[in-house]
Image (cartoon, rainbow, N blue to C red; front, side, top):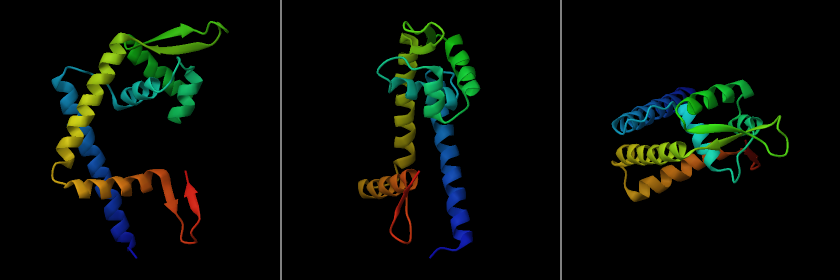
Length: 154
């Protein structure tokens, strides 16, 4: 059983690792001249998973943010030509968000930067250690098994 101090240390290590990943990813993005925030990056990645352009409300729900936050993100991405607003053909009051060719290019560069950052950070680990880390992270991201054996997913 871990002590509260040990849990606090683990939490701090996770935060430090997250900051390091962001720093390294940002460095790789700067090398290719891509100026994009982590939140804009997340919106582009989310947008790429939709089969057809989603509504702003869909994006807000998926990202678990208020609609105003999505509006701000879309404004920034639209200013750089990475997305565009388009009226829904079935209901002109509804606005859908489409990724542009520039947005798809930015997404490719983002993926490359994320891969390069991951390779840099994971370099000291063996393949077996990477598998263990992946399984542990899946457990933390997906939820936990409680002490009574029930599965509590978030």
